[in-house]
Amino acid sequence: AQKVTQAQTEISVVEKEDVTLDCVYETRDTTYYLFWYKQPPSGELVFLIRRNSFDEQNEISGRYSWNFQKSTSSFNFTITASQVVDSAVYFCALSEDTDKLIFGTGTRLQVFP
Amino acid sequence: GAVVSQHPSWVICKSGTSVKIECRSLDFQATTMFWYRQFPKQSLMLMATSNEGSKATYEQGVEKDKFLINHASLTLSTLTVTSAHPEDSSFYICSARGDSFVDEQFFGPGTRLTVL
Image 1: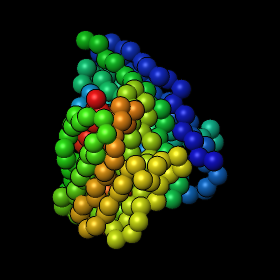
Image 2: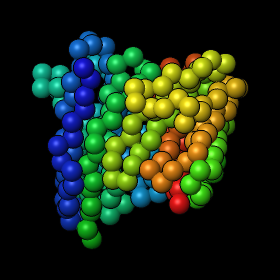
Image 3: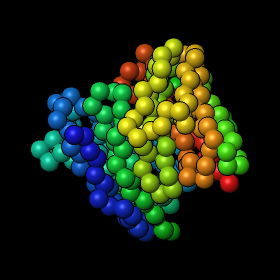
């Protein structure tokens, strides 16, 4: 069965702090994709990253970085030097066959000035 | 590129009426479109998958007769909530996937439905 767990319901930090959002997934497939999306208060989903199961290289994009570890079935997301504009709900998602995206329950991040 | 629009962005209707939500891919042909539902402060749940020219495939627990999905062209899919009730109030989000982007779905901005 496929499942995505985001254990952190809500995180509050002060600007410039680093914050890591956790994502643990379950799948029986050897081929799958993992995603992170940002959902600001406006509601529109913003695509952040897609990673396939064969690529375990960590990725960095500006202040964002992702750590993919198949051994622990985790795909964690770190924001360095957080900013108020980072405040949003962040969703981790899993796709086994490119047809269905299974979303985690989301982590609400609040960054205070 | 890969822009998906939804119309309307929000709608308020009376209980018992039907509401149609449109999802359009603006700059690519969407062979597959997906409809998600998101209750306040909850996750997105896939409702159905539609392929152009075919009947939609509904997820378990989603009423086909209540949520009518039509994907008549490669750029347009519609979701009609029939005989809407207050419990149908939710945020409805569509996404689209084209042959050029087989591994990725592009999301619309969502439609907020409130049923009084």
